[in-house]
Length: 248
Image (cartoon, rainbow, N blue to C red; front, top):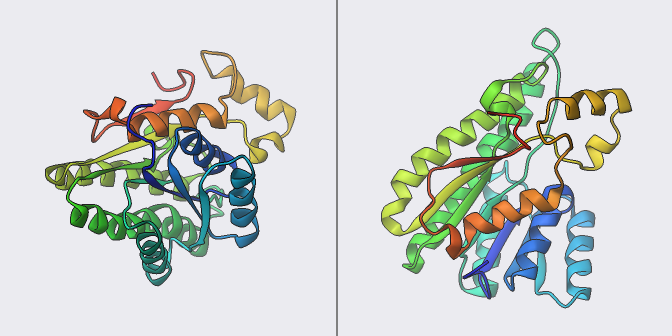
């Protein structure tokens, strides 16, 4: 991808899964990558693995649901690198239950991380991008379930639908500062979590995909990289699905 070399990129939730693959993809493009992760064990291990491959990668602990933690992370990145060019809001959690069984705590936890966390990080990092004067790129993790709903995911769908809405607002507000804001809506992606699902459930999910397979974390990471690169320089306010055709 054009224009990513030496850019400073923050990837939240970078300790594993899509976030880990995204951090590596940006490293491969020559970026300086900050792996922002709640779990110090996962974050440190992922950053160390990338450094052993010769990439510039560092770990910063963050709880995106807590404003003070986000402020500390942003300040640490700015102090170390002097700039922030790309933000990938990837951190997210699940607490799936049907409406009848969903507790208020289940609802609040998911909203706090997926929706409020995305707001917290974007507000702090966007302020740095505006101060720099040359703009930046922000990409938010949504989900295909935000587009069509899903049984047992009231809280998760609400959070991701909210992310899509905030993406559109921020693209309008931040565009005048040359900051592009987009969202990515992954479909059925093969991760540690999906690999633990019963084979019958996996087969049922794959049957819904026109391409006939689950996606890979690398395929999601590639879309993140495109949207952050100069190749995506005129894309803003969009929600792009990477789902094998599930949402048509």
